[in-house]
Length: 284
Length: 240
Image (cartoon, rainbow over all chains, first blue to last red; front, side, top):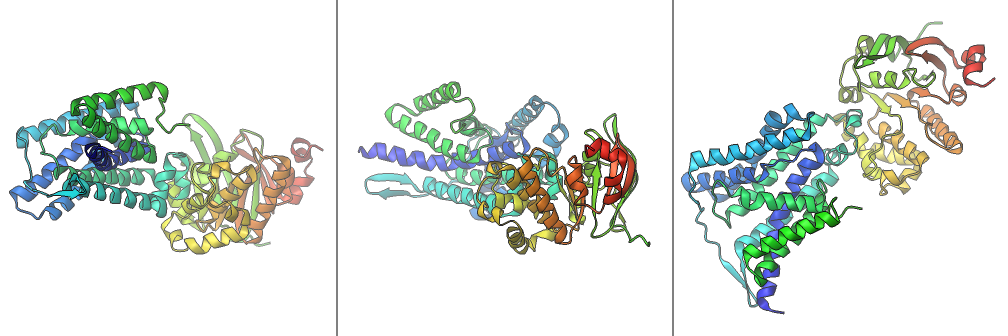
């Protein structure tokens, strides 16, 4: 096999890991609270800025900056739920879409106001690894490994703990959660913090590979939504698999055509599948 | 005869859904170790009664005391932590979770978590069928097995009072027999049980005392034997 094609496939797998992490966060929130956070990728942007400022401006060690970003975006997730979602949770879904859509513009504008439109880079030069004849970015490899570890930790939490079990149960029967001793409001806050924390983790991984600017969310937001819809909204496993499929289309498509064309391909694939399987790839 | 201190006492409890009032000044008591039945036709307010005791809906008026403590108006998650478990109508299992995960949900309250493994072993001993099916999705169980799972789930919280809403509803007659056998097992384990049933004949063989609820009011109460002997009950519910 062509070594460059192999490289593209491996890069697709590496990209898939980070996209899967984003899809997990968005799907978790949708699956439990039944709300789509349109501004999800903008929370990632906030996290990237936080890391940039703490590390470059204040000279914090990168790991400490990343830890603060994860916790900070988790807290931002809680605030999004408390301040924006909770007051309108029982109203028509369009209100929640509009409200979090408004948050998207708010966060973009706020970032522009605070940081300007410059592209900023943490200036970390990670090596390129040579495996056989393939050249792989260390940053991507690390991002993939951390994303998969994050997904495994999430899976363990959801399958092994009482709270995780409640998170899986709640969408199946909200009314009787009280009889189980579960307060749905608290579960929503925990899930919002988890979703935010996953966005913060994604920020740590993306800031190693990309410059941060106020519109960076647009590079990941739309593709994340497509992945979630493709995998079946709220279906964690479906979204996880769909992330790797979309990443392959983008990466291998970029190898055969161009990176722009590969996004066109990804969107065409998405549109066609929405006609064939509107409930997602893994619907029954 | 001296009445024992009641475990549960409802005093003049009214409840409503929006503008529709379903309970009017209901009073009843359940003593420790007793099995109490509430019978009545469809729409009598039996399910509302269960829901108001377990905190799913707040009482409009009246007082609910559990073990001497006023619990009326407490949210459901506090009531279950306080020792009342509710097996809801139609079982309401989480169909896409495994049997084991459904049972784990029953032990969600903080006080129950520490004894999770011990209680799980006990529930599996009580219902070996659940152990066989522990990895199966609850939605794929048969009706009788689902009722077992729902009862097991309620027991996992370590309740002192068990509320059961129509445990035989929607089950085939032969399965209904099994479900009543389950309830007898629960009684034999020493649980205090408040049970609501349409299946009056079988329930009156099971409980110590019963109340007749009709259009949201208690019409009659007495020992199971008294109710079985009552001509009105015989005509309306026992088909005599």
